[in-house]
Image (cartoon, rainbow, N blue to C red):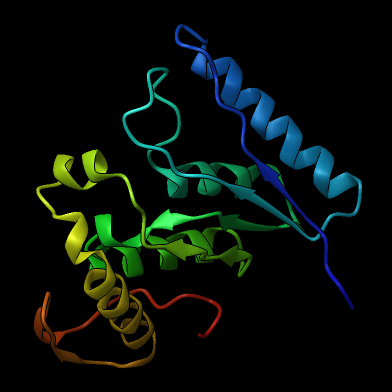
Length: 167
């Protein structure tokens, strides 16, 4: 069966009350659930004039507390901006809080200023992305993680907790 989802993608003007915006997004997710949608996605934006949503996972954790059925996802998380072990841990926690409703959507990103803000080069985004996906999947499925790549070297890493869902 084809599933339907909603992406909340509001871009507030500078000076917008972000507490009010959060309440509106929460209401939007709850309405999407009541209306029978299967999923609700939030975006990730950095260096926005209004300070809008640089961290989608904490928002999804909060939405998990206010919904019960709808799947909750990142649309998308800019994976090269995150260390993959931290992303694996944070996603596992959100998946547990949501009782297995997290959808992790990832992308490579493209804004040079975003990469520069994290001390990264946009030219490294492909290898950061590819290695990040592999490390996250392995972190969720292996008891001890050993990984040697172009961007990451990980030795004897145990990532806990594991998510409810399996990749």
